[in-house]
Structure formats: C-alpha cells, structure tokens
Amino acid sequence: MANPSEKKNGFWSREIDLTTGNLFKKMIVFTIPILLLSLFQLLYSSMDQYVVSNFGGGHNSFDAISSNSSLINLLIGLFVGVSVGANVVVAKAKGQNNPEKAHKAIESAMILSVIFGIAMAFIGYFLAPTLLEWMQTPKQYIAYSTIYLQWYFIGLPFLMVFNFGASCLRAMGDSKRPLYALLACGILNVALNFLFVIGFHMNSNGDDVSAVGMTTVISQAVEAILIVLFLMKHDKSTFAYFTFKGAKLYKDETKEILINGIPAGLQSFVFSVSNVFIQSSVNSFSIPGVLSEDVAVSGNSASIQIEGYIYIVMNSFSTAVVAIVAQNYGAGNKENIKKALWMSLACSGVLGLSLGGICVLLYQPLLSIFIPESSFLSEGVSVEEAHAMYEQALEVGRERLLLVGLTYFLDGWMDNTSAFCRGLGHPNTPTVITFLAVTVFRIVFILTLWNNVEFFHTLPWLWSTWPISWVLAISCYYMFVPSYIKKAFKEIDLRKTKLEPVETKA
Image 1 (tube, rainbow, N blue to C red):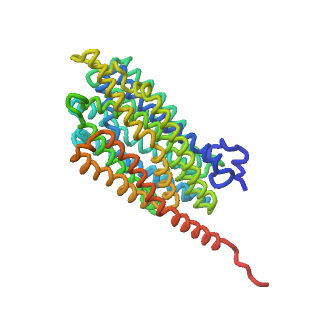
Image 2 (cartoon, helix red, strand yellow):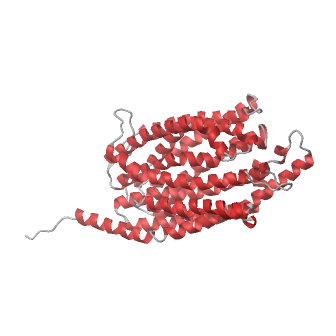
Image 3 (cartoon, helix red, strand yellow):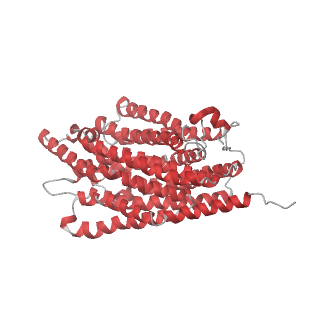
C-alpha cells in the first residue's frame, strides 16, 4: 500500500518512499535533483576556471586551478566517502521505519563532518606546497596552485557539513533540498567571481586565483548553513531531523556509519591515487620541439572539465542506488533491489554513450570554452605561436575525449555496481576491487610500460588505462554480485519468518 502522505503529494513530495509504487518513475524523480545538484556544482567550479581564463591571468591561471583537481579529490575523498556510510545507515532505518535510529545517525554524521573537515583543513593548508611538488606540478604554476589549494582547504569544514547533510536528506528520500541549497550558493559564487575579478580588478599576479578561491569558501559557508537549517526543519511528514540540543556521537550509529563509510572513503582515496599518478605524468610530459608541458596540461585539463559533466550523470545514478537499495533492503522488498541495479545500468549506459558521442563531435567549441586561443597570448609569444599552441591543445583534448569521454559509460556501470554492493551492506568489496583493478593496474602500467617502453610512452596510452581498468573492475564485481543478492534475499526471508505470528491449535 502506498504511503498516505506520498499519495496526497504525488511523486514531487519532499521525501519519497523508495520502497513502494513504480520504482522506475521514483528513481528518475529522485535522481534528477541529484543530477542537477552535481551539474550546477561542476558548472560553478568550471566558472572559476572560465573567469580566470578569460578575465584574469589566462591559461596560466586556468592550468594552476585545474591541475589541483586530482589532488583535491585524493585528499577529501576519504572523508567525504564516509558520508556514504551515513546514507546507508539512515536509509536502512527509513526502510525499517525506525526514526529514532535515523535521528541518532544524523546527529552522529553531522558531528563527524565537522571533526573531519577541521582536521583536513588544518593539515592540508600547511602541506599544500609540498603536495603540489610531489605531483610534479610545473614550476610556473606552483605559486598560483598553492594559493587556490590553500583556499580550498579553508573551506573544507563547510564542504564536509554540506556533503554529510545532503547524504542524510537523500537517505530519507529527499534529494530536492540539497539542490535548493546548492543553487542559491552557486549563483552567489558566480556573482562574487565576476565582482571580485572584474569589479574589484583582482585579475593579475595571482589575485584572480585568490579571488575565486575566496568566493568558493564564502559560498560553501552559506551552503553549509542552509543544509543544517533544512535538516533542523521538521513537521508531521518529516521522518527524522537534526537538533543542536543534546547532539552527540552515538556509539552504535557512529560505529555503523564508520563501518560502512570508511571503506567508501578508502575506495575514493585509492581511486584518486591512480588519477594523481596520471596527472603527475601529464604534468611532466612533453615532446621536445613538438609539444610543450603547458600545452599538454591545457588540453588535458580542458578535456577533464568536459568529461566531468558526463561523470556527474553516471555518479547521480550510483548515488541514488545506495539509498534505493538500502531502503528496500531494510523494508524487505526483494523485487525492487534487483530492479534498482538493472535500471541504473540501463540509464547510465544510454546516457553515457550519448553524452560521450556528443562531446567528441563538438570537441572544438567545447574545449575552446576553457582554453580560448587568446589565453595563449602573452609577452614574448607571437600570434602565430599562440595559434599553434591552441591547435595543439585542442588536439590533445580531442584525443583524450575519444579514449575517455566516449567510454565513460563503463565508469557508470562500475560505480552503480559498487553502490549496489554498499546498499546491501558489503562496503569492503568495492574498496578491494577498486584498489586492485583500478589503482594497482594504472600505477603498474605507468611505472613499467609507460615509463620504460617508448611505444607506450604517449598520452593516448596513458589515457587508455581509464577504460581498461573500468572493464577489469566490472568483471570482478559480477563474480560477487549474484551471491550478495542471494544472501540478502535469504536474510530478508528470515526476517519475515521471525515477524510472522505463530499459529496455535485450539
């Protein structure tokens, strides 16, 4: 029977019951706000790079910011991944109709977010220059990259609060209010970018990089405040909520969050380690007299920005799958558990291939958004030389889009299957598979064939490690998924048996 409140408000109610009704419709309605949130989040991040590239220091500032992406993902992935644990715990409590447990999990999660955020901000701020040197960041970018990275670390506590809060809301079937918070703060971020860089003339000598870093922190602070207010707001239809009064770390819920979340964080961490190795290899790659380091970095970075928009579509479904599977596992709905996996694979496959193909076909106008030809003009560089560098950067970006952008649907399949395992309460398997099939494979390839065999020492071979590792990971997952489904169904049947009343003879 449908939830009465949902029947009254329809699919567009604030909290969606993901265990009843038409699952496909609910998955789409639930996923769209997650997709839009990620889309705007990336768009606002891209605006930082667009503003400095077109109104600030040109491609030098652009490369200084974009070369941080792999490192940032590496450092914050571990702690942001723990928010997945909060998602699983709250979603299972929702499926079991246990609001008290959900309330304790939410309070514990929000306190953890503050602890992790402050710790990472303090450590990262002072280690920023050293970390960038380890990544072999080109010397001409080190100073600007350090400025941006330090600003990013300052804003980490706010980012953590938002991610944990959004994860808790999604676990209860509410994927809309995190979007509202992000929309408001994203618009603020873009407006402040233009105000600081153009209005306040912070457009040279690294001031542009500092300006966009500062505006990011301001918007993240507002974003964190909004998500906490949303969590505190409650009425008769609210399943669970957050309150400052008496808030503490509850032992059982904190332990459960960490058991489910730390493996997810480690998975993100080890995945990002391989990307840092690849980014470091790109940073130091050049072909004397043919391709310079900064041109290779520009083309690679621009392609990464475009691929990010494909990735968020894939990741939106995997984010939704965790909550959907965990809710249905808690509610004992076996049919929806299987449906969630196959529906997410079908959606990410179709959308991933379509978006990848469009990006490859429109590579020139898309790449030019981030690396306009004018950005290569500087003192001592002629118009002809700038045009040649621009054409080379476009070619580098095109080759990467062909190898990575066109095959990103494979990453969607990998992430959806990983999320499915987590929703069923198997957090360690995705971490081990990611470590072996993705991280170890990529690093071994770089340290052996790519570094030592001339035939393989090309950017296309380096980028090919993405789709190859995705295929390896997917193959590994489907050695375990059937047994996990069987185990979950057996546990559901046992739960139902215990709940059934025992018949007695008259």
